[in-house]
Image 1: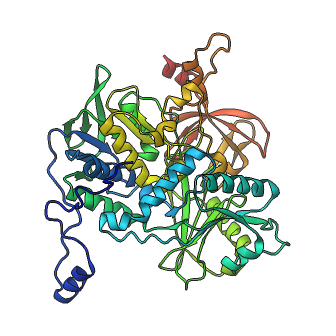
Image 2 (image 1 turned 90 degrees about the vertical axis):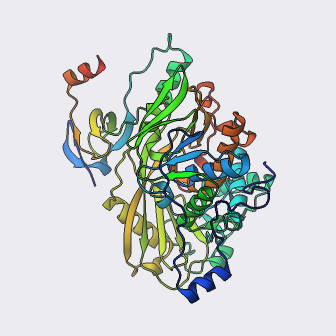
Image 3 (image 1 turned 90 degrees about the horizontal axis):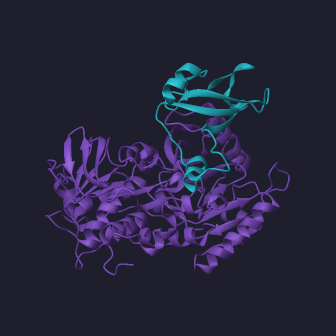
Length: 431
Length: 89
């Protein structure tokens, strides 16, 4: 890993972007002065060294690490809508690293490490709350998988252990741990470093610091084509005009196939919606994140007091982001099986995000057969957790023109060679 | 909520069906190259628009059938063989 991670010669404020601090808060509070904009709008240049398609956490993190770790600053991040409006704003903001494959564990552990110091690196409060993460086991088979995961995790130095119903009840008193339920809780994989974060703050923090380092963020700019000549990328067509560039990075999650098609690169990706919902706010009663693979549900309580529910992806491929009644009924029923006490709470809203699912549930990262066209896609249901480490690894990959060791297993060539990285068993809920 | 029209049973709630994914012709086992197998097994067109798919009516007639569905609006229609042949040309 790069020693100066996220910092250039010890300081990363450029172009006069003011630092946020307790003092600046007091000052603004007393004087009522306007805060300066966190990032600016720039006129589009005719050419950039790197063009990143997709202004979510992956795209912005890639731009940030390219600028701070590798000194490549002539970068444009193109976003069709507004930054953080896709998967980065639609996930359930859960962070964890207790995966099943050693590749997955190593990768997400690096991501958690980066998240732990992100607020300091970005000078932006990302509200990371490491409140612990419980994956419940309701049958012998899943309990066995929990033990397997715990052992893989411990070997990679990730804090993870299997606990019994008594300890679970201590951590989450509102869980129904009786033996008379339809799916009795036999045990859980407890992962203390897991938790939740403010996902918008992560996007805004990366955007602000990338902007301070000279990156241009172009919102409401849709890519309409990618120019490839003689097997090399030469430019990008947008609805705001053409940009000449030797490097294009596809960070567009659910829309990944549409962008890759423009460069003539085929993808093993299918787009599925994943729905989530949030309740009205109540007093704090749920400290940890609770996940049940058997019941296809995960629950956490935000700092505002709302319960956030998520499920598995919808049962068929679609680009539609509308909610469905099946999801609402299913998620409510499953939450009540776990926590009957919340039956009087009301749902405030539900939404869907688009997940780019791959055949082995692992991402596709690195170069493609078109020179200069890089992909950071196939994140499926857990792209947000991986934001910082993907940005760091993709920046390394682009600057040094070869994939770093941490992502070498995730190349697109694995589908031809049959080296799939099966992460299915470790996804939070069954797929 | 989506109504899907089974060619045998008529319109039914989509929860009765299982999604079988895009339908592509299978390569010939004795002649296919590794690239053809990769394309068949893993790659997907993943269109934002009309897609030719396989569905299985698990809670009904238990038959597999092919259908065209729009992946953004979830509208669907029976496959028009003539149109499909034109698209292939």
